[in-house]
Image (cartoon, rainbow, N blue to C red):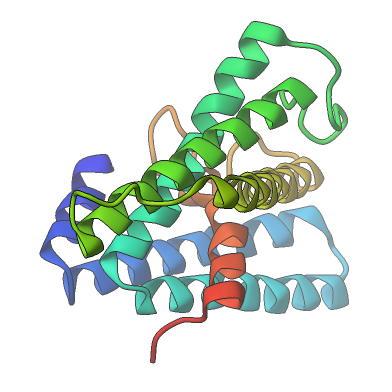
Length: 210
């Protein structure tokens, strides 16, 4: 998956757009199947499916319209959140955030996610600024550290919220994974659940290019 995603990022359009479209379509199918399993109420099913189309489809549209460096920044943020959250949670442990929804998520893990997101955003801004302005620039000044930390908090919480949303839906559906598409890792929705709200926030704050 990493190799395919990296190849699409390097190749650019139209390969990247096709990959995003394929992932969006696959995730939507998994989401719809979860909703159908989660409730027998036809009205709830229709409302859930409509919400999923907007939630997942809009994120895919926004991501497809971002330039490649921004796509890398968003994907890197979510990977940093997941990685740091995992190691902080495993190392520190402690109280769970919502054990009935996702038993493995701890407050220590969320703290790790915030640290990871903040470090990635700082590095991304630093190297992006040097790329644009030249190697002599520092990338950002001390006054921006607070803003970067705030961005880290917002995006880490958003990524974790996306994870909780999928975990809640899977529990309602009575399944462990969104599908068996990726052996040992579940489905596409399991892999990008945290990325969807991060993309939506990036689109709302930055705006997607026309």
